[in-house]
Image (cartoon, rainbow, N blue to C red):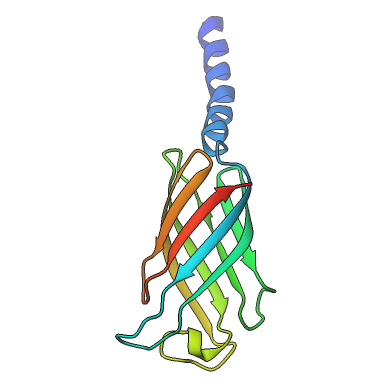
Length: 140
């Protein structure tokens, strides 16, 4: 009985450590490149490319471009699965209306999702809603 109790305690202690280790294989500093080509079909939004830093800690990505809540800002975040798949959330405020779908006033809130896949020191992603945007994630 004592051996069973010891084994149960060992398994309980080992399980969180192995889960954390699996979620942390992507941990570190990353560079995010977001590219959105010009959209001439529906909204005539101009194309742009932006790069910003992101961090992954314990399998959770957090990235920020600009000052949160300011015009032209963007925040992305979400969990990365042990297999490298992720569905990230993006939130921000528009900058120049020429670069946004439907040309809302500057500082209008927006949000979208990013389907991403990480593999080693690189990842790719695409915007799910509205205009086409691609993402590249590179470990620094």
